[in-house]
Length: 158
Ligand SMILES: [Fe+2]
Image 1 (spheres, helix red, strand yellow):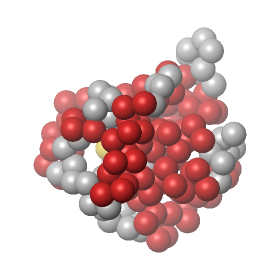
Image 2 (image 1 turned 180 degrees about the horizontal axis):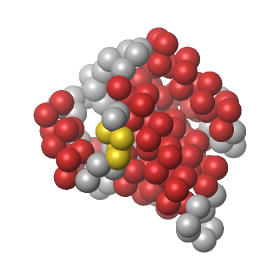
Image 3 (image 1 turned 45 degrees about the vertical axis):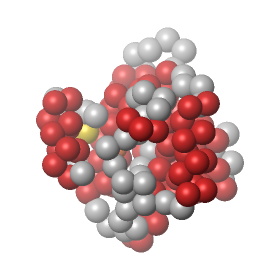
């Protein structure tokens, strides 16, 4: 069961305090884009989409890292019973379900790497996974942008 909007917003505020960065503003824009799109889609909940978008990078709470933030987010959400949010913490980085498509560094243990590899291959994506992937690519910390601009931003940072 996913948290409500207030709980998710509190989680982001706390996470920002432990690791301040542009990622939190980026996450707010992702959430807003997810909600705006979902609210026009039959069968999707705007509120659920907002929460899942907001939490996708919550793993950043654990500090500055590369792909470690994916599994940190997965653990953070799993520990709270937020299972779909936990899945998206990992799935948002893999439009293609192959761990080798990542451009980041796997700054994790061998065990965690194998867990993530397995998870990515076997996850069953739904429209929320794909919506967060899309909106992640539409949002800079400063606001919305063309997909191409965000891809260049990611490339420069990694
Ligand atoms: Fe993101």
